[in-house]
Image (cartoon, rainbow, N blue to C red):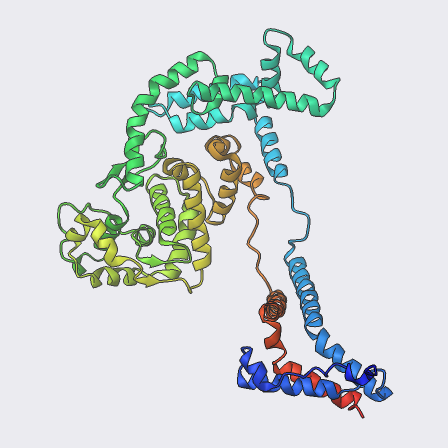
Length: 532
């Protein structure tokens, strides 16, 4: 008799759910294994959403929206808040407004230079006359090479770049006819050709070793005069550079460099360096307080409050809101300009008043006395004395520290873009410390032409530079609040991204043993109901 097979004998055994011990053996902690077992049990006991009551289903949907959508909504709201507050902050600062193109200021300067040529005089003849005057130099007929180079670099602006380019392209031909032919074509093609022609002349000047390369535009006789005068001038310039760069010690007579000292300057025009100027003025102010002030190596000098304050900054005694090297560099140029007769009396008065509010002579004298050095020893060893003086007086929080620091920073930048001697000469004629900011704007535009531009245009040169040097943005309390809120919103968004990355990096078996998974399982069973 055939064996009868019943259907229920082939039915598969129900799959057994792992218990807490099995989860623990898979790498979870005891607490995680217990939570996962309990969550799985509750999920098995929970009925389907299709079987749940309407109120329970609504509550469950709200819970799931909160559970799954909290982080995405948090991220979106944080980014929206950051964009809103950041946009309001930028609008308040004006950073979203279209900037004034830099070409407008430089273009206006070029127009002012070209229009400064005297009426009825050929621009090339005027330019060559200025070069001759620079080589004629001072009363002792010493060539002023700094001035000569500045005027040489100004040649294309004076003569006209289009004229120079057309003369180069036409050669022995008619430049006017060539210009008419080029103007008949596309403007951009003409401009490209003109720019290339002038650039070829400058390349030729550089290849010939001319400094500046614009000397290629000058006649041969001027270049020969320049070569003959360059040797004697370079001797004095080397000494000046060595002193200002700290490679030479002792004293430097500024009259040895042609053009550095103003013609009407009176008094001592020697430079000794920051510490030595400081010691000289300390002895001039209170000789009885220091031993060694009567030593022969210390020059006699009248007491000068401005010179004393600048010497204190130059020696590194005073802390300002810029680095010591920047403050010392700017103070050194101011000290040299004062001795060279390049500072107007109203400039000196305003600067002395600003420094007096921040630094008193008594403080500086006390700082020197605290070193315990004799005056002659401090004068003979300036480097060692500077180490003892450095940073003794902190003025960073005083009124006027920001303006003084900005002025010294501007002067140091002018010095770095030109040279120490040219920076001293550029300070000539400034009405007050506020003009230093405009002077830096002029140097940013004119670069090596700045000395000639100042001579040619006078005060108008500073006016042309005003759009370049924008005033610092001063933020109001509302702008500070907007900026702070934008930063907090960005930090909030970063926290969400970090939490998301942590979740993605966490293995799934660990996430299933988390408290959030247990809470979700419990809430689902509570709202959807248990299976019957």
